[in-house]
Length: 129
Image (cartoon, rainbow, N blue to C red; front, side, top):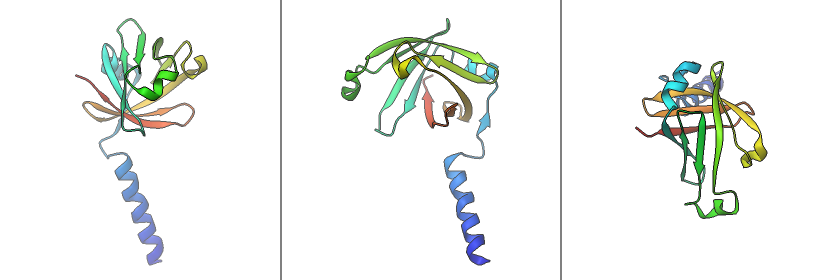
């Protein structure tokens, strides 16, 4: 019984560490207002933040030319982004083989978000002022 209680407490603390209690799911309108016209820097497991510029006109520009490993890919690309329901969707011409992805977004702080992609991938990002 005590082992189960300790395990449950440990799982609860791990969940808090992953997503703070202040995390809040954003509506489509809130997502649009938050990212439109701004640069979103996706945190990567490699310790670099990849910048994506979400323009007001629905264009998203990604430029990874500064990162040596990314030079093997298309270093800069323009795709499209849009809001669909309470998710932000985007599609690139060649990145991700042109596949469309949609993301649920949670606010972690005024300038930090957590995202979950429709294929289950997850991560965080910082939004430039």
